[in-house]
Length: 344
Ligand code: NAP
Ligand code: F7E
Image (spheres, rainbow, N blue to C red):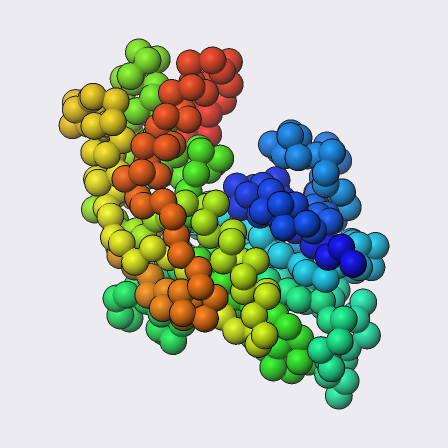
């Protein structure tokens, strides 16, 4: 029997890579699409003939029940979220609703369609497996480095706090109803499909734009922030592996290597033969109200139990993104839109 997967957030970076991976694994893939005419649907147009779509929104419980009832999935990947951290200070309630309560709504939809509730627990037969996109932002002001599954949470933004709720409610439904529900605590992962507002893509776009004479300055905030960055194509494999394990559990996923924003700029500008110090301008407006200074993953559990390994290191990732942007910026009339998006 062909396995069926439902992905929320299919129009996002991870959704597109995960859809490709699951199609290659032989799944029938459905994407939850929100809005009347979602402008980002075109991002997955190259896959569209192999995908099915169902309408729904993480803000709308009934639409999620209907989507799960229609698709009858074997696996649900909840990747939908407002994922840009600074937006969570500006629209804290909305971000909490989508990223926190949205998780509860998907779990409730699965519970209702599966007929679970009260004292009734899942016996494991034909049950829907659920993946929640948790985040290293839950560690925030980290209690220890590197961070592992048992590290205490100290979120530094409404985004991180909402993700922590989503994480705990996922575990709670696993323990309360016997649901196969897991969280992937994923560290930053990037690609040429990354939104232009995130720092790596902002840097790769600027390196390309400056090289091609279309731009001169790159405005950035905190250059000293340290992250554990990996390639999104590698990380979606971990999501799938988590749902194939015999027992449901939560996993930290990251490379274990630390780099600063300054390193990212240096690698990108070196790649096109530019001196970054001639172009980067520090903009205090881009410094966050509460910063996450340093994150680094200890992924021993994922590597040991799932056999997961990343294949692209950070310098190679940055060069991949710059190369892709050199092509895109040179041929695209969309350059202005991308620049506008990266100006956050
Ligand atoms: P992304 O590119 O920003 O994509 C977010 C997706 O969420 C989009 O498809 C968007 O769809 C959808 N969405 C937003 N609001 C929604 C709503 N109300 N109902 C349904 N869908 C909604 O994010 P990403 O980088 O692929 O990340 C995927 C997930 O992993 C997110 O949950 C993110 O928080 C989490 N995460 C990401 C990273 C990372 O480094 N990338 C690390 C840890 C965790 P529209 O087209 O409708 O806007
Ligand atoms: O910032 C610093 C900024 O916006 C990284 C999301 O996918 O990963 C992502 O969250 C760092 C921060 O990602 C600029 O202060 C400096 O320290 O690329 P980012 P993020 O906030 O780490 C986690 C794991 C998620 O879950 C999120 O969904 O870079 N930084 N100057 C800047 N950041 C941006 N965006 N723009 C700047 O100009």
